[in-house]
Image (cartoon, rainbow, N blue to C red):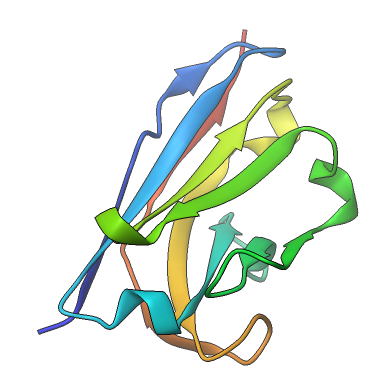
Length: 119
């Protein structure tokens, strides 16, 4: 059984920071790109960031460039999303997904972790 488990979501104030973690179990982690998506009720899921299997390529949507940083530790089967200078528009359920390559589509994904940015 393949599981992706996210953690780190919380309530944060505008300008604050959070670090999300995504741990993969039962999956050949080093061979997959991993994306972070966010979902808001009534909107399409949005791919926020992606990291290639060996960490040489990273992708960010424009609205998070300079604020979010994606990284991975393949020895721990973990991908992180460091989120700084948060604003209310970042409020969403964030989930990670394993992909053959960034943008290829989600092969496996988790349930997500809720991030709420509010004063």
